[in-house]
Length: 216
Image 1 (cartoon, rainbow, N blue to C red):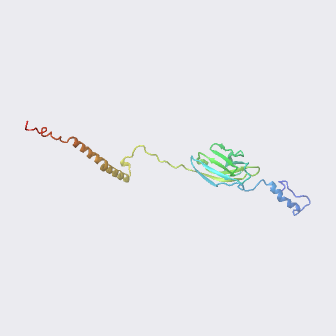
Image 2: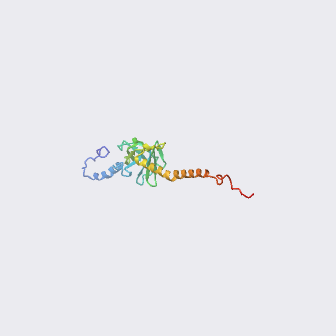
Image 3: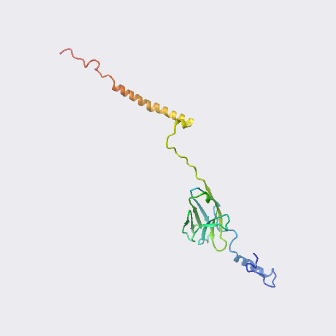
């Protein structure tokens, strides 16, 4: 872009080294809408990770003075062409669209983005941005979605001894032996003792009754 394109030109009859040159820096500062660095007024975590079907939270702090401005969360590798997914209304009211929500905190100068029910296709490049006239300040955030941990199904029936590992079979054999010694064997002896007690000979039954006195 030339000076003529932004409405600045040399006065006729004046050389470039004239005093008009001293007016150019202030004028250029007024015409430039903001810093060329999009992350000059806002910061972010850089990279966040969440589990599939889970959620993640992104916090983006900004400099004081940007409280009433609209904050937004957009997706795309190119900052200029990223697609806005959700934005604040310029207040601290939470806004939710689909699985994404955003809320601004004017006291802590931080707005928070939450993504729920994550999917594999949610992984990619996102941006925390502040909407204003001119170039929007923004910072890039990389989102990674991890896989769900595999769960092991618990069998409904007890496994047979033949399907167990040799160490498992030896353990079961040891348990069975202990049960035999400390539970089954005493129970068996108790039953035998009870039978013998019931069938014991009654005193006097073998002699035909109590002895009779000879003197009558």
